[in-house]
Amino acid sequence: MPIVVDIDVMLAKRKMSVGDLADRVGITPANLAVLKNGRAKAVRFTTLAALCEALNCQPGDLLRWEAEDAVSDDIAGVDMK
Image 1 (cartoon, rainbow, N blue to C red):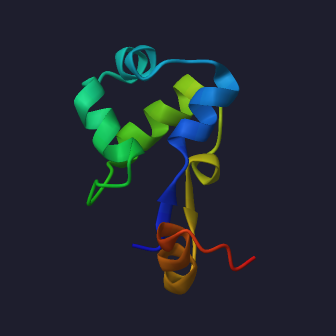
Image 2: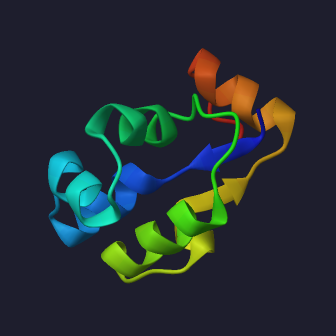
Image 3: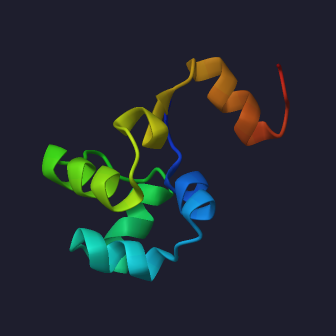
């Protein structure tokens, strides 16, 4: 999927654990892991807003679009940039 989730980047920048973020947002750590690892099929705007509030960021800091070829190359370990 060409949507890349960068929650782990924001967690590192904020020096926050997955468990702490899950508590602040009001979701389980397992559901946060599904979202963080890009396995979620959808995200509610209320959840996205809660993530942004807890991390003091914008939605674009958490989600970004990459062309399908670039994502495939990244998965294969090839850096085309």
